[in-house]
Amino acid sequence: MPGGCSRGPAAGDGRLRLARLALVLLGWVSSTSLPSSASSSTSSASLPAPAASGQPALPGRCPAPCECSEAARTVKCVNRNLTEVPADLPPYVRNLFLTGNQLAVLPAGAFARRPPLADLAALNLSGNRLKEVDAGAFEHLPGLRQLDLSHNPLADLSPFAFSGSNASVVAPSPLAELILNRLELPAAERQNLSLEGMVAAALRAGHALRGLRRLELASNQLLYLPRDVLAHLPGLRHLDLRNNSLVGLTHVSFRNLTHLESLHLEDNALKVLRNGTLAELQSLPHVRVFLDDNPWVCDCHMVDMVAWLKETEVVQGKGRLTCAFPEKMRHRVLLELNSSDLDCDPILPPSLQTSYVFLGIVLALIGAIFLLVLYLNRKGIKKWMHNIRDACRDHMEGYHYRYEINADPRLTNLSSNSDV
Image (tube, rainbow, N blue to C red):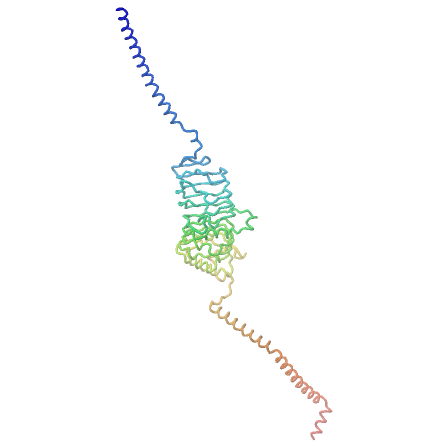
């Protein structure tokens, strides 16, 4: 039995060692498996969720069809056949070029974004086949200073396009430069549409453009400027009306444009500038007027303008202005003309002209009263004229009887004998 007892403790020690070794191995395996599982969970957490790919573009990302320069704060979407304004414009944009696209309609809030495009200062929409600009199309652009809508067949420009969609509350526009050159309307639409009236309504609506500094309306075939079209633009400094068909400036007033610095009227159909226009231009303290390439008619109506040109310093390049009509005066320089060259009759002073007009009115009134009296007394006048006729007839018969007596010698001898 002693031998069996001696084997028991030895076998127990072996089992104990095996148990301890198993515990050590189990602890090592558990320690190595935990970091690997943690790392796998961490790596799986770092992977993007599949739904993340469907979220909107991050702020500052450039729209796919455009070219962006964050350093220059400029976005160019040129000739990309866009039919609407890109929705993912970066908020840093200051200069936006959307030219040569297919933006037929510009609806209200076309540039409303979150965050807003607060720094957008220059917007170029030229050459987009744009036909319609709705009210409030440029809302939510508090920093917009320059807008170019040139080279578009603009047929429907809302009067509140530059102010807001709410016509009852007209907010002032931040615009300083508005460029509306060459609005290329088709001939069929131009017959039924007054471009002059449409543009004038947008410029006059609610004083929204009181801060405008530059207005360009060149190459629009304008025949006239509507009355008071410039009345609500007191801050205007540059007005470009060149290459139109303006025949006169009689109805438009420049009186309130006290800050106007340049007025371009080249390549129009102006024949003469009247005294009222000349006086208004002369009263503007800083203006420079450009009048080249107009068909000036050098007749008697040109006398006042020629005298004004010789005295004023307002007109730039006035030595280049020449006559176009009549044929005998063609190419004559306006500054070299005299009243004798213009075949003018002596003109009465205005006071004397007024006196003659008043005298004519008085004489006409007297004549009307005289005719009225004659009409009211026509029966008495007729009777009176009959009496005069009868008296004249009796008188003439007496003369005729005496003539017959004097002509007959027998009656003459009879008369002598009777006297004896």
